[in-house]
Amino acid sequence: SVGDTGWWSAGVENFGSGKTTVVAGTATGGSGAGIRTFAGTNAGDITVEAGTVSGGFHGILSTNQGIRATSLTATGLVTGGTYGIRTSNQTGTTGLTIRATEVQSGGFGITAANFGSGETTVIATGAVTGATDVGIFAIAGPDAGGITVEAASVSGGVGGLRAISSGTGATSITATGMVSGSDFGILAENGQTATDVTIRAVDVQAVGNAVT
Picture 1 (tube, rainbow, N blue to C red):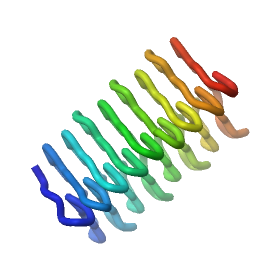
Picture 2 (picture 1 turned 135 degrees about the horizontal axis):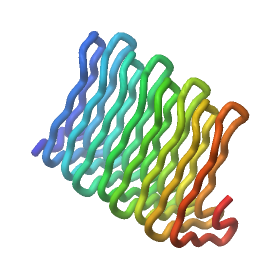
Picture 3 (picture 1 turned 90 degrees about the horizontal axis):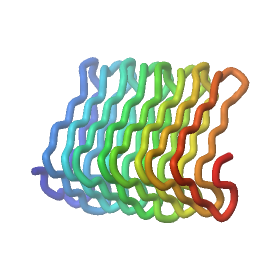
Picture 4 (picture 1 turned 30 degrees about the vertical axis):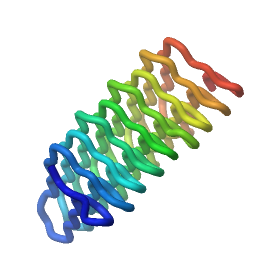
């Protein structure tokens, strides 16, 4: 267990050339994040393995400006005031993977933004909730490959699940439970360089467009 330091519970900044690894059973942050990781331009992989995580603003916050991949795994409940899990891979990185069980947030549930190369993968086996915004939001930039989202139930104040790809691969979305939102349930957008879009869903509900 990692205790509250007032801003974040576990905060790691790596401006070196090696890997950044955080392993925590329980991490409870104050007004900032439960777990926060940052990798500088010469750093390697970011790996986070956690159980239950909570923070006033972010549950888990990860920014990778390095030359390798980001992998975040949370086996317990992750909560944040504005973001449950928020990740950003910048140019030069090589892939982004999030595996979560249950995520709750007052804003966005899970956001995965990959502006590097490689695949963008979000797997959530439990309920993901973004109360005022989007439950799961995945973005692939122009150098990235495909987007894969595998979810159970997802809900958001604006939309349930959104994927935007400007990359070169396919977009695949699978939801085995209910997906719900106000403006949209599931929204997938592939740019001109991307390939297939595949959506498999059981139950999608929205005031606006259910699947678009």
